[in-house]
Length: 80
Image 1: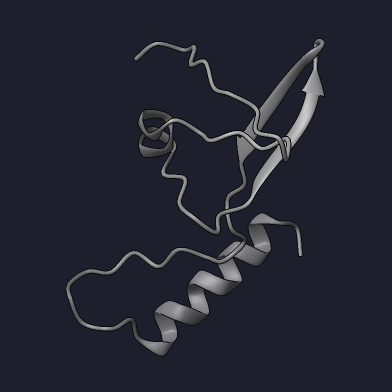
Image 2: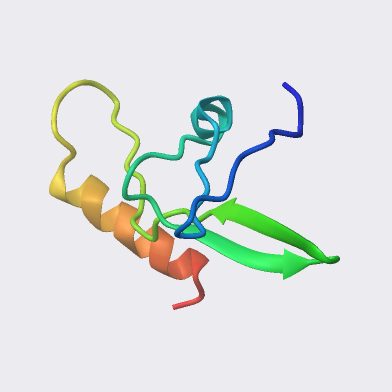
């Protein structure tokens, strides 16, 4: 995949993230992105949600213990 895409800034100063990049970085409507300037460049980064991810062993819903453990693990990872 090319690292460069050319997009147009609209009259409302908006840009569209090209579909190929959205797919690679799993950016969907409603997701948050962070925008900042670094080395005189505009940078857009996908923001990961703060919700813990629960890995399911099968198609059944997670147990209370799995949910509890995932929350505790996420909080500990953030230093809480």
